[in-house]
Image 1 (spheres, helix red, strand yellow):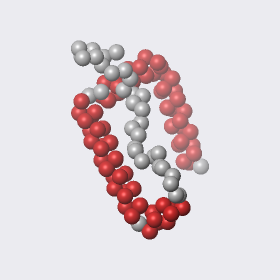
Image 2 (cartoon, helix red, strand yellow):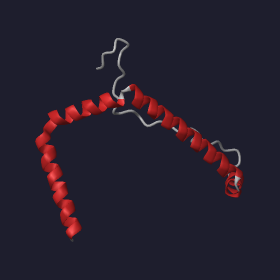
Image 3 (cartoon, helix red, strand yellow):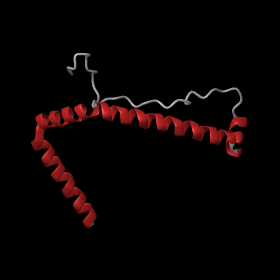
Image 4 (cartoon, one colour):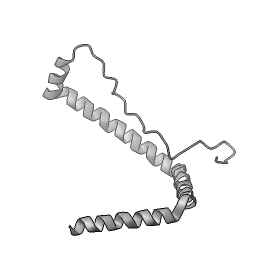
Length: 106
């Protein structure tokens, strides 16, 4: 019961604080997050993480296919192609429009 009460209190406090902050504060936070996301070092780290994820996915897929379970799964599907062989990057909803070559952002 105490946990539920603490949760509801936190929920109410978050709602009140969020509504007081308003749209202006939200836009400020969003702009700061967008600026941080567009920083070259963050983009480089995201690229490295994506490359590692692709490598691990490929290695795991290869190990599974060479295992007994993978062999059983492959015998059940004859001639079908798997369209999920590639990891797709999530859409960059935070990144927004790309900046121009002059260095200005939109």
